[in-house]
Length: 290
Image (cartoon, rainbow, N blue to C red):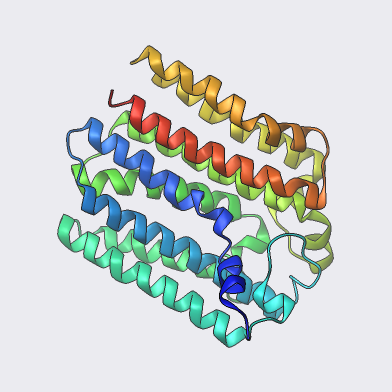
């Protein structure tokens, strides 16, 4: 039976910035629209956290029973390592996704925008079918698109919309930047896993682009938030600081990816990219409202 620390590690806490950053950026955009609600932001954060924990456990379960994780490099895989029974990990995934659904329903009810139920259902289905089902889309190169949509566009714009009943151009810019950051984290992860994914028959975008193409994609993705910061600076010159801050925080990760690091040597790049994303979201939310 897995220990508590193993369950926590299996939830992949290093991915949590992917859930926190879109809500922080969305809350900042809501403040700029004079529509901030702290408790709606908290609800949105809990939904986002439940979703990412759910997708991580679902990924662990689905990859584990397929044998994809047998030679995986990176965080502990509960099923693949044999420390937890597949049914237990599946239950953890369903509980997490169910909690996201319940909290999302509450948020939709208080906002009065019932059409958002469709978006919530799509997010939950997307979390499961990333690696679950007979033809998981993550195995066919569509994972990066899903991450951009769910943890970028939906995460940021959804947080704004349930508070302000509308979105703004700065909110859209933040959604694009956070989405690219989050996609960059997955790209670095899939770059690390190219050899084992090819062996397991998992055709991620990274395996399709190859090593060099994936490294170029990562560099493009982390460049977008810098350009967004410069674009936002057209309305407030202080936001130019974000470009410099972002580049500074990303330098170690860029060095690892551009420098040809492989395997475990790329693990810090995932952490550093996630930290840069969270720092960008917090700094943008603050500077937009000074």
